[in-house]
Length: 337
Image (tube, rainbow, N blue to C red; front, side, top):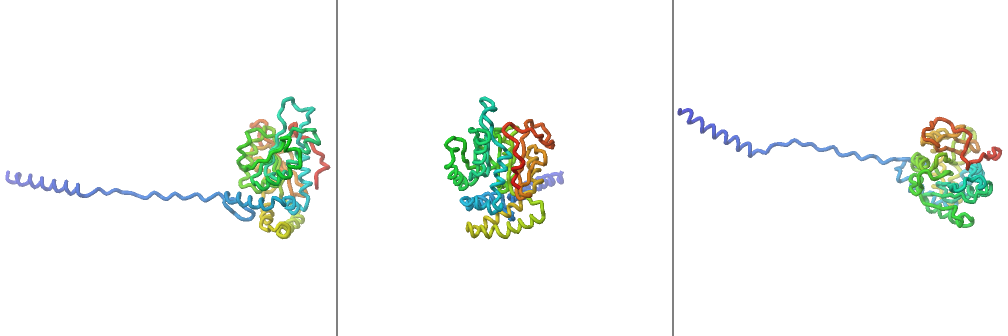
């Protein structure tokens, strides 16, 4: 009994000390730091031979075309050895825009054309003039969309000498080819872009927008500098482009850097087959013959794609000779080689 009476108080004291010790010592918690989120590198693209973030290219291209807006024809004369006017004439003749009022469907809307990166109106004037002169179509309408306000200002200045503005058949809109939110889906018959698409930040995105706004059966048509197939001519043209054009740009326009960028942008643009592949991947059908036509041995090239009338049509099937009613066959003898 004595042992029991001694042991019980001792046990109680030991137990009390254990409880106090447990209460006095805070429990340890294990923790770890979450790994810092790695920032995604900015998306890049090319500006001439430079690699730059996409948002930087847009502002730098804008600066180039603001610089050359008033000397745009001079710039194209230098870039094409003066042949750009013949190329543009052929580009429009081959599209053959216009609906003869004698065969037009009664009550049908007028032909709708979107000319992208066409701020100065060079292509728009030709399209409207051709529609009226060849087809007697004085209702066709062209919207000129350009991201550069200086190019648009030059276009409006030139348009003041034509009847198209007062007739409500021509308008100029400041817009990015990659986000044409002002144009409804499936509302355009012909989409044109001449000597502009190589300056786009995201060409695939622009092609997707072209596909969205074109009506089924609508035509995407692009005129652009391209790759020369003849090695001798290619060497001569590159020597002219990189050696003479920037220097002449400095003398004529006081702007060597802009002209240096422009010749570099031609070199960086995809080849005929590569760009035709991009058009096809964008959901367009390619006309027979690969979808492109070389001009002046490839110094320039016309690319075309047709939005399928039915989306189920396989993209690999070439488009037959039939064309929408507003497209007329051109005279092959007029090709400016």
